[in-house]
Amino acid sequence: MNKKLNTFLFIICATLLNVIIAVLGFLVLTILYIRFLMPSMPETVQSWIFSFIFISAIVISFVLYRIIFKYLQKKVDVEKYFDPIFSRRGAKK
Image 1 (cartoon, rainbow, N blue to C red):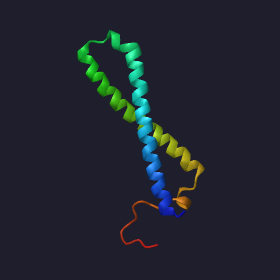
Image 2: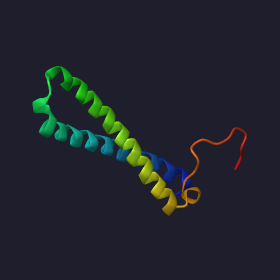
Image 3: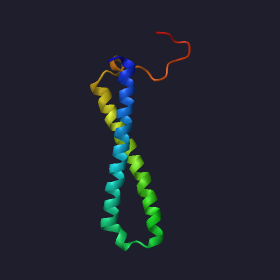
Image 4: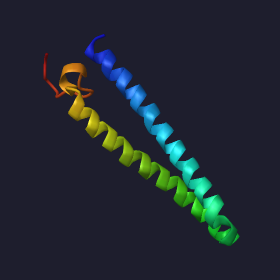
């Protein structure tokens, strides 16, 4: 496999991982909310809570993605296996 294919596969897998983390975070936060807080909340607040849960799941996925990516950078020589996505103008190989 060449560097461009490695980069493409990494982007696809990283995107899927990020989406899966966001969905799992949303489900976990929703289950916790329904289990512990929903019975005591008025209905007008519940719609705002779900918006907050959605945004929190995105933030959690972003933070976990960055932690995983930093760990990966320590373990794998990124320049050896991956091609840069954007190159400088006029730069030639």
